[in-house]
Image (cartoon, rainbow, N blue to C red):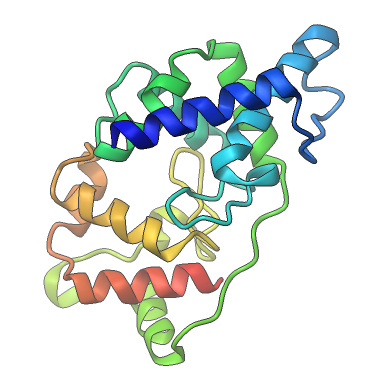
Length: 211
């Protein structure tokens, strides 16, 4: 994990020093002058892992494009104060977020929230249909609530409940597992998914990646 973190820091530093070109145009009303330039650099640094304009091509790193701004802001602050302590958070995000002011966090969150969402990906139609059922109906026999209750009818997210639509299935599965095992502290989610089986999780994430 530590070696991955060093690689990320090194790549980020090279971007800031070399001015690598990313298609990450900051909205005119987000900042002006030096503030806008600083935000541009931060967005470019995020793009090393999260992709141009927040559309990640690596399943290890989540898409940020069209994510709910309050959720991005909440997570960046949790990385910064180290209250989100799952292994990937420690390896990739603690050091990165430690350098961000609250104002920068808010600006970055607003920027990525405004970007077009990543497109969904296809997969097994049977698995996707099963996952759609779990998302919309839950698992009543095990008292597992529908995901749509908090994450929106189309998994678009609501405020601090994240957008799940179009997210990488491997990333979503890992997050479900670390929340279920309490490696990532998320009391509400843990209560909902604590009895979800891995097979049910795999169906859910296949559906979410497809939309």
